[in-house]
Length: 485
Picture 1: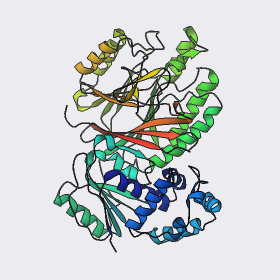
Picture 2 (picture 1 turned 135 degrees about the vertical axis):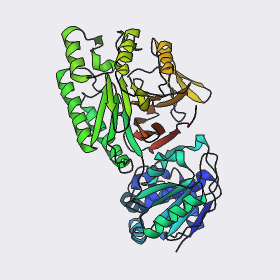
Picture 3 (picture 1 turned 180 degrees about the vertical axis):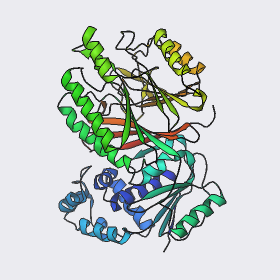
Picture 4 (picture 1 turned 60 degrees about the vertical axis):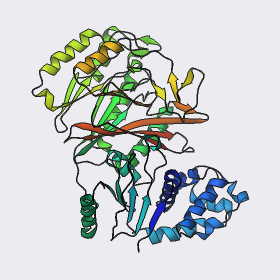
């Protein structure tokens, strides 16, 4: 049986779909976090009724019972608090839908999806109205939706999924719709082959203090969930843009090395990193002499790294080079050395150059959902950091433009940020173990980039925000790389 479920507005329908599949696929905490107040709970129940989905136990929860529910609770906890058989009722519908195939037809950015017909699936959800760029911020995306978010540059399209698998297919034409229908008929829709690889961009872990152990555990939980959908035949890349350690002593070096070894094994990944100011500072003082040499030799390695299978050349820049550890400095001498090494790469024009450094090149701003703190002010809808950026930023930016370098990844301010400036993307990672604060919530953050190794271009950047206490909703912001500059 196929139900065509069409929504009149983007976010209302999308929120209903998202909450429903978080509920169905045992994402209990995400489901309860979606019920912000009794009105939103009633809206969700109305959404279920509109789509002919009956869950009697939800209808038994009155306003008083709802007032006892707290964000992040499990279904078991909610059942006990509200004295309902909600857990049993959800198990009933979960069992019924366990092996069902769903197709979610998603519009594009300023592009509505055409009215295609499909057979061979159990339920079809459609959002008819197109998205805008500002709509691409998603709260607690249900398991499987990440597959579609990674490929947002290919929307409009169809996300086909069940409880175990998910694949996204672009739907720009009748021929693409027919190709998807053929896969459904042949039951090969989950055997999708593509030409994408994935990059995890982490920064500012500040390993050393014991409290970071729990933060690392939370980070791994989030990465594990993400990793189910960031799949490729190419090896995953992990780029760490500095401040691996809180301070560079022997114990912390071993801890940083242990973290990277674990990440390498857990995700079968290749790891590349640069040093941050905290990797060079002991109790507020820049280290020097023999100790500095030891730290750099142990951690830094080569300045140029070639990822041959992806046709990527990584340029690892030491932004601590000029001695200004707070603002960062690169120096002309370092860029001349890099130029010399790049000149030694045969057919350099066949590669995509990606620059890694620690310090932010330009001022960065917080996402609008993060509240203003005492050292910040609101400018045109964003929260602008007043701290100064890289000392030789203009010289560095000119160098990037002259060499047609389009991708620069950094950290330092614990503020995730995505900016296109004169054809170069400057992508900042937040702290992967926590650094952003909104009210009483502390967020850790990381980025995931999708790279097309046939086009040799980055396609999407997803910024993940996770609350340390898991009480607030995970937020995923999606940014698209433009095809032409």
